[in-house]
Image (cartoon, rainbow, N blue to C red; front, side):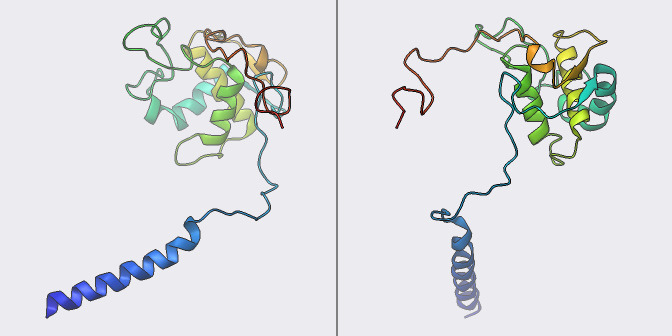
Length: 181
């Protein structure tokens, strides 16, 4: 009898929970899109906010916000940011900022939106520029005395800038390609 009561209560609870959750799991079709989306930083630097940061400032911020996940030199196994150059064609490629990422602006955008893990979007624009500078420095992409700004970040040439190719037939929507309307 006791087991049957527990089973009935469990079924009732699961049914109630599923009914409550189903309202949040469905698509939001027919609702206006939010207007408060933040901008996306493009490879050419379009969308970069005003700001600046140095490698030196980034070193301090990295030690505070990044070292636990990425290691003191950015090479923590499983979460590497640095190293890996020349490994992309090997049987064990190491995809890091220095070996894989084609644009420094993408690094800025990612740090700005998603880091530090668990405390996302807690860094100011200047702090994001500084962390970006330090990570680029760890990868021997920029010298230690570099100060990144919204005016010079897009000019940073990443080692794998030419490593990505798109289909010759691809055109973004609205530009005459196969996906145009």
